[in-house]
Length: 154
Image (cartoon, rainbow, N blue to C red; front, side, top):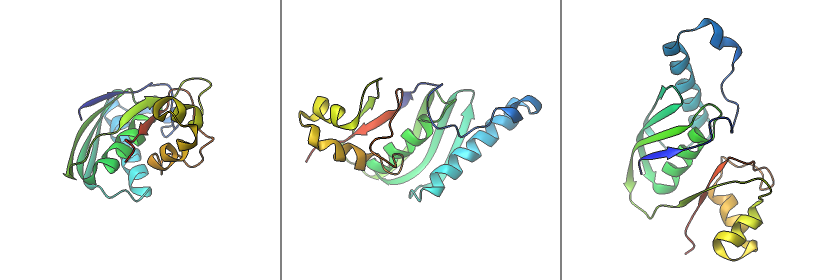
């Protein structure tokens, strides 16, 4: 897929800011990478040889995934983290499938409104919700700047 842009100041607050004062950039980047990998592993996503390298506000993601959905979820979990502005996808997919499109949530958006816009049917909001699990835990908890997967309908 390549390089993906995200809003650096939006997203999950996975990284602390207090400890940044006493550590080198290399130490901070290593710790951020470790936290991102732990977050991905905690969700039970099947990624072989997962590795994340942080370079400033860019994350390079390596590994092998079974399908396109898993790859996209990993990209979104990393990119929807505060402090990450770009994700450089270097993952391999075992079973190639069509790519989803990505949608950046705007102020006033909610899943049924997005579903109406992209599918022409507000009742398809659950397709978007299910496509973004485990990143989304509740269909009512999305925020401006968050990037969501929009899968193609069968």
